[in-house]
Image (cartoon, rainbow, N blue to C red; front, side, top):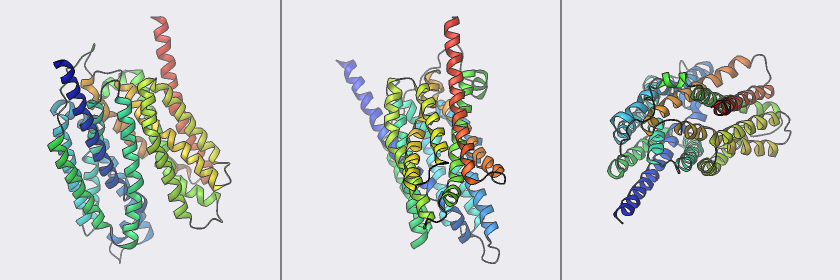
Amino acid sequence: MNTSRKTGKSAGANSRNLALLLTCQAVTTLGLMMLVPIMPLYIATLIPANTADVVGAARWSSLALAAPGLGTLCFAPYAGKWCDRFGYRRMLLVSLTLFIVSMLLMALSPGITGFMLGRLLQGVSTVGVVLTAFIGHVSSDTSRGRSLGLQESAIACGALAGPVLGGLMLDYWSLRPLLTASALATGLAGGILWSQLSEPPKTAASGPAQFSGLRSVLADRELRHWMLAVCLTQAAGFALINVFALYIAARFPQAGALASKTGTLHALGWLATMLAGPLWGHLGDRGEPRRHFILAAGACALAMGLLTIADQLWLVALLRVIQGACYAALMQSMLLACSRQLPASAYGHLTGISRSFMVLGQMLGPLLIMLLLPILAPIHLLWAVATLFLSAGLLVLSGRRAALASLLQS
């Protein structure tokens, strides 16, 4: 009787922790994403009028978009490792504090220097890494897929609302109040989390050898393939963001209001991701995440290929919905599959390393488009995006074949 009561209390605490963490994920993602589609427009308001030009604004905008990725790339492995070592609750407080300071820096800085420091600090906070690690750690082995699917929906919700609110505020008022409000909302969420969250019990290291971070990932073919695959999918996703507006303009040159149409099509993709995330998570708990990753990556590649021949906007919208729904499976399937190969004590460290590979892909995707743009038409650039998705699926498929061969030999 006492055992069942303790189990029920533990499950209740984990459910409460999960709900709080998902809310925090949506709030912080909104803060992260509100600037992304309107960055050049906002940067232009920070540059002195006598030096402002289109090229200068574009250059600063590119640097501002890359700055958080640089911070995350450098600090993500340490953030995950410190979660395992010092505690998830403590690391979340530190991460949220840095995130709040970064938002206030961006909101209150009158010039470009302070804004850029805020963007860099936003990446250093690694708030996404800590939240992902915490969510995975408080979830049981049988419900981790569902939790990661719900997190994918929370991310999509913030990514959907952030750009809409940011665009409206910049058009009709000022973005600074929204940045300040986002910092205050994150502070409120942090206070609630600190008072309500309970630290999950530490799990002793187990298995034949302790997880030693990047060295273990590179030494294990299975983990190495997973990390490279998720890097490629992130490269594909961010390459698509870069090329999609150019594709719409080239494919439908006579259509009016291209900016709003492009934004709506992006929003449809995020909406599909938000709705499909929990479904993929549920399937992951009941099945094989490797299979789901391969199918989803292949479907994303197929959708990109079909976009090159789509001649109606409703067809483009349908393909973006399919691609968005399948994209929701990729990151969570990777995390779920890798977590089943390693002890629970290494989950935070693994999450940090995987996030570094994802950020690397987010940088490489736009770089690839920049290199190909002089030699390929925007419509044909979609084949490069499709190739990235397809390559990711083939990498994971080759890992599956290697695992089956090893099993047969034993």
